[in-house]
Amino acid sequence: MPIRRLDPVLVDRIAAGEVVERPASALKELIENALDAGASHIDIAIEAGGRRLIRVIDNGAGMSPADLDLAVERHATSKIPDGDLSAIASLGFRGEALPSIGSVASLEIFSRAEGGEGVRIRVDQGLKSPVAPVAQPQGTRVEIRDLFAATPARLKFLKTDRAEARACADVAQRLAMAHPNVRFSFSAPEAASFDLPACGAGEDGLLSRLCAIMGKDFRANALAVEAAREGFGLKGFAGLPTWHRASASAQYLFVNGRPVRDKLLLGAVRAAYMDFLPSGRHPALALFVSCDPHEVDVNVHPAKAEVRFRDGGLVRGLVIGALKQTLAGALHRATPTNGAAALDLLARRNFAPHGPASWDWRRSPAAPANYPTPGDGSPVHTGFGEPAQAAFQGAFQDMDPQARAHDFEPSRADSEAPLGAARAQIHETYIVAQTRDGLVIVDQHAAHERLVYERLKSARAGSAPERQALLVPAIVEMTESEAGLVADAAPLLAEFGLVVEPFGPGAVAISEIPALLPGADAARLIRDLVSALSEDERASASLERRRDHVLATMACHHSVRAGRRLKPEEMNALLRDMERTPGSGQCNHGRPTYVELKLADVERLFGRR
Image 1: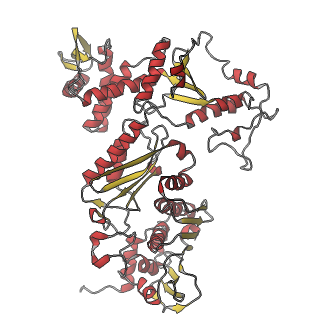
Image 2 (image 1 turned 180 degrees about the vertical axis):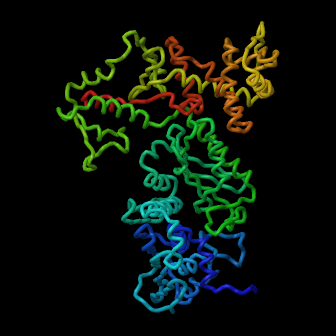
Image 3 (image 1 turned 30 degrees about the vertical axis):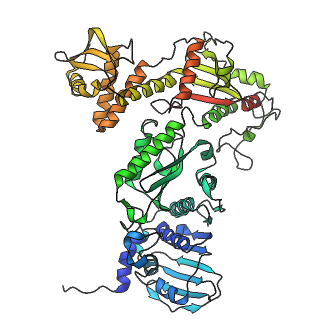
């Protein structure tokens, strides 16, 4: 068969396969055009998940009749200065979106530039109509109807209207994050509508926009991130490690105002949080990378969701370093929602359906965001069925009668400290401390585990760790495969001061242990390490990950165990060390090390407020 030129409409439909993958893709292109036009207000409406209708109205610069006529032609754009693809400062630039959409849908555009007349153009399944005058305020209105009507096969690959509507909402929200000075409104029958007012400039305005999208709890859990290196800037907010998610859907990354899903940046985020999160959990954050357009290639894929940096290692190092420094600066800080959850548990357990309305838990500032509220159709109990004191006491009626709270008078310095002064130890496991405006409950094992871990990390970062020779080498028997695993890892273990060597088939000898682990049970430690090494081998973990896993195992092994009675000075020393140690708000496995309860909320439990 001879080679021939394809029909222009068919060419546009082929291009549309990459540019317009689903309704959300088309919506993204329209919003980017509105932002490039300098709009300060963007209204979005969709129907049937975007298949039936996508409408975007903006108050931007608008287009003249000549520009509108060219806008629906392939590769016609005003956004590439002097044809230089390495200096793209706009969101759109390819000149493919509108003609591609018009080839697979009914596209209608209304526009008016400042001082000009309103004009209209229509492209129906690739057939272009002439530009015609029309009444139109300054700005542009774009309507897409019957998307993929000309390519019904594409419709089969779309998800439900609800799922497509949520994808459209996500696109709008991501672009709204990057442009907090623009008002965004979104309406759809199948998804939650929203209206985001324009926010002020600076850090406060950005945080307000992020909280409007990520939830009001983000403000209490957000850490400001700001760094710069060799022409690259980084700013944004990162969530506390104890405020994690089951998926990475709450990770928002931007490059020069463009939402991206970049593997390099996602990998940098994982590396920065590696020490803090439980397995399978993900942080919530919004990070904005800025740089000279010449330093990043945005022309990697027609969807423009991928980028390529000229110096990827520099950007990765900037993100990891900034996040680690920010998390370290947070020291012992942990999410306040843990305390709210604890109070919520008590309230749910002790509320009765009837009784005096002494307290409405929904009014508590610590109440979780998803707690039942008036009018949502969920049952809400507003009072205790018996005196509050008796109800609260009932929460502890199953407590071991052998438990003892050893209390004592705190010093003024300890009382004024962030984690307060230790007042009691309960079940030889939990330390109860009194703060200026509440109380703190600390898991002594989890807290000390993090402290030991950070000390071991610091020792590794410096010179070779000090070792303590054993008077008699400890011989540990195990299976031959386990002994081989330990022998293979001997150089790695020696980095941390643990010297092991084979001792016949199915055994190893431990001759030295880290000086930071005095009195450690060497045999038990090596058996714990075998489990960690086996897990890393199955997961094909990186060398750095294996190092961290070894450190975490050592720290867990040597930390203060639950069931050990502590003296008052030991408890206060633990609290003060937590306040000075980065990441001490969670243990090495990502669990919280303490819960803080505000006095005002405790008083509400007793009906005092």
